[in-house]
Amino acid sequence: MDKDILTQNQNITIGNRKNINISGVKKIDNFDETEFLLETTLGYLLIKGSSLEIIKLDTYQGDVSIKGKIDSLNYTENSKKKNNQESILTKLFK
Image (cartoon, rainbow, N blue to C red):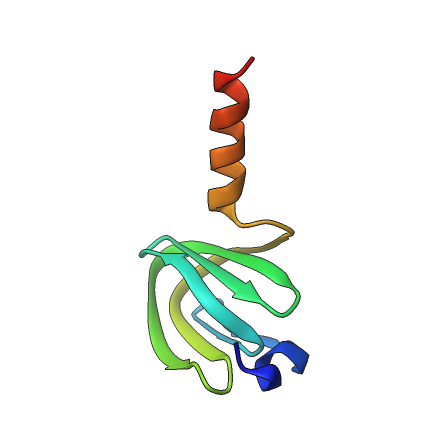
C-alpha cells in the first residue's frame, strides 16, 4: 500500500445526495448498485443507497467518486465480510 494514502487525511464531500467524493481510500472491498464497502485510512466505510456507480477511481491518490442516491454512511472497525464469517463460525461451534 502506498505510504501517501496511509498518512493522508480523509475528506468526504456529498453533493445533493447524488454525488460523493472520498479521499483516503485504501481499497474497495465490495460494491454493487446498492452498497459500497471501502477500506479507508480511518476504517471501513459502508455507503448505502440506490443506483450507485463509480465515476472516478484514483488508486494512486486514494480518491473515489460515486454517483447515485446516497442514503447512509457508516464507519465500522472491521469489514462486513469478517463479521459475517465470525458469526457463522461462532454459530457452528456453539
